[in-house]
Structures are given as structure tokens and as C-alpha cells.
Image (cartoon, rainbow, N blue to C red):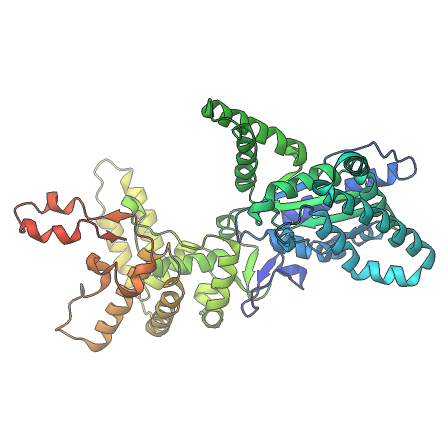
Amino acid sequence: MTTTYIPLDKSESAEQIKPETILPRPIYDDLVNFIDIARDEAKSVDKDYNKSERSHKAISIDGERGSGKTSILVNLKSYIKTTKPELLNDVHILEPIDPTLLEDGESLFLHVIVAAILHDEDIKKAQSGNANKDGSFSHTLEKLASALESVDDQKDLRGMDKIRSLYGNKHLVNCVTDFFKSTLKLLNKHLLVLPIDDVDTSLNLAFENLEIIRRYLVAPCVLPIVSGDRKLYDEVCWRDFHGRLTKDSSYQELQAFNIAQELANEYQRKILPLPRRLSMPAVETYWANTEIKLGTDTGMPLPNFIAWLEIFLAGPVNGLENSKLNIPVPSIRALTQFINHCGDLISKLPNEVTAEQSQLAIKQRWQMPETNLSAVDKFQHKYAELTKRVDRKYDEAYKEFEKIESEPKSALKEFSGKHASLTKEWVHKLKTYFQYEPKAGSHYLTLLAKEHWLELKEQKSQFTSVFSTPLFQPLTHNCGELKLFDKPYDMSDWSQKLLKKLPDLWFDPIKDKRTRPC
């Protein structure tokens, strides 16, 4: 397995200059394989190409916002350069095409695709370096522009002009294909890869953009790679079909809904074939990957960092009865932003955290800084051994633990000295990040409480309660900086649980209050 690392000091960017910083590798490998096959197919039909040959072979990359789809499209060419450079002798990969560049009122996503080709630096250089090929390229471009213009004018034409325009529309596919082939001839290559980023983003034109892919990007010499959220594709498609079915009548709306969903499924099956669908991994799958490092390829393993975060966000809990808070980092974009936010402190972490392989040992060492971990291990094994006995007397396990614990602990004391200052820094750093994450209300309340307790410990005050923090004050969750957090619970059951303990009038103001308990 290849080691990958996430830089600590790099600003958020889809482009990754170094291949060692590219995630996720399996998606790239699948894309390279698909491109390799498409290149061979394009070569085989290059000489005996029949314009009637149409095939839907678009590759789709499914993922929610922030899952890293754009980064894959941006870095695909760089990845191929480092892993299979000979492939680029026959393949030209355009920069990712953005469908949102379509202005309101434009009907053809083809305008943006053609503009992206004309803007490509390699194509500009090829035009200036070969006058003969450039002439052919310009000729096919003129034919395509004329066909596009006739399609745009259809709505204003009548009679024979309308018929001529529709006839021109029929040949638009051929004009598009000829333009693609002349582009490849200009570059002396066989396959044109069109990465199309987030087709679903421009919602008002999302279905129309998919229609362009269905109608025109079907030649063997073209390979579209379409990224987006497939759930949103499905929503856009069935709603479009449903709108057409119910446009003239709302009779049997439920039946129309079922038909629309079936049509949407088959439509997507056609333009985005199932065997060519790739899905971005959930961010949680990276957390267990020990081959992903932080900072450098020899830095702290990502699972160690996750264990480190759980020390502050969950604490020494067993996970039962909803006691373990999940880390509110929903996407790879959020993860890289978070690592960048904590980068200055990550570099300060002691070797006991960064080099340790066992996540449990990391938590034990930090949460019990003055405890000998070998004593804990021996106690655990002895306890498990005694559990198998009939009498189940565990005093031997405790005696063995006490014996090891009584040994000198100079190294442990040194480690314990790092404990207080680092804890305070990390609690503050995490608090400043999660205060803006809507789903991190429980985590923010927990960090506020930890910060409060650390201050009490330093001041050794006897006049401030440990409960004097918003974690134990649910009525404050609707005020100030706590207002932005999601609050899925209310206080409607308080009146029943506190019946006859408090006046009824006390409950009236809190019935509609929302809260986010830990």
C-alpha cells in the first residue's frame, strides 16, 4: 500500500501538486483503467469510424458536497503522469468543465464544452504550430457554430425555415463529433476526456445538461467523466418526468409519480451505465487507514489523530448509552480544513502520541498520564484469566497491578508535565473550530465545560460551581453563540417529569424551547 500524507500548512485547494497528497487512490486507479480501455476502443474504430455508431459510456463519480470529487478531476492528469505517463501520448484530458458557467436563457451546455476546448493551452499551441491541421479544425468549428446557431433560432422560426432548422439539428451530432475528431487530429491523439464537474449544481439546467451528454457526447473518441451527487441526479430526473406527465392533468398523480421514478431510473441507467459508476468513500473510511499520515509521509498516522480527538470530544467512556460523541467532520473537505486549523498544534504533539500504533494506548496514556500502561495490560490479562475460574476472586489481579504501579515512574512524570499545557491549548483550538459547525453543538458544549473545569483547577476557586457552564444550562442554548447549532430536542416532557415539584406556570415559557443535550 502506498503512503499518502495530508499537508498541515497547505491552504484548501482542489489541486494537489505532489502525488503523495492525493486521496483516494482507488478511484484514480479505476479512472485510469476506464481511460485505458476507452483509448484502445477509440484506436480500433479510428480508421473505420461510422458516424451512426453511438454509445453511452460516461463515467460517473458520485459523492456529496465536499467529498473530493472536484479534486479528483483536477488532479487526474497529474496522477496519470506519475503512474502511467504513456497513456497521455494518445489521450488528451481537458481541465474540468463547469456547467454553472451557463447563463440564464442559454439552452446548450455544448457552448461551454466548445469554449473549454478552444481555451485549452495545448490546443492553442497546436493551432499555431500546424497551419494545415488548424484549417481543418477551424472548418469543423465553423460548421458546429452554424449548427448551434440554427438550434438556438428554432423557437423563432416558422414554416420551411423551421423545417430547415430541424434538419440542421439532426446533423448537430455529426458536427459535434467532427469537431471532436478534428481536435484530436490537431493534437495527434485518439481520445478526448471531458471531466464535467458537478452537473447537478446548476439546478435549473441540470436535466438539460444531462440531455446534452445523452445526445452529443456519444462518439467513441470522447469520454465524459461526470461528477455529482447521484441522489440529486435522481431527484432532478424524476421531477422533470413527473412535471411533463402532469402538465396537462393532475389525474392519478401517484401513478404518475411511480412512472416518473421508473423513467428516471432507466434514463440514468442509459446515460450513466451502472458498471461505470464510482462512489467517493465516506470520510470515516480514511480514519482507520494507517497509511495516511499528517504533515509528511513519515508523520503522525491519521488513526492516531482521530484517537487524539476522541480524548477531548468523548473522554474516557465505553460508548454505551450514547456516551460516545462522534467526530463532527462530515467530509474530506471538512477534514482537510480541520487539519489545517490544527496544524500548528499537531506538530507539537509528543512522540508518545504520534508514534504509538495502538489507539487505545494513546487514550490510556493521555487520560491516565501517571499510570504505568504495562500494569494496566497485565491487570487486564490477569482479570480475564481469573474470570474463567469458578470462584472469580480478582484480588490477585489487583495485587499485581499495585506491585507494578509502585515501581519508579520518572518517565511518566515527565510525560505528565506536558499534559496540562497541551490539554488547555487543544481544548481552546477545538472550541474555536467547532463553534461554527451547526452539527457540533454537543461537542462545543463539552469543550466549554472542559475549559471551565480547567480554569477552576488553575484558580482553585471554591465559589464557582462545576455546573456553571452551558452544558448544564439548557435554557441558554437558544441564546448568543449557541443559537446557530442544530437543536433536535425540546423540553415538552419536563412538565411531566417535574410534576408537583415546580409550579405549573414555570413550564409555560420553556415549552417551545429547543436544546442540544450531550
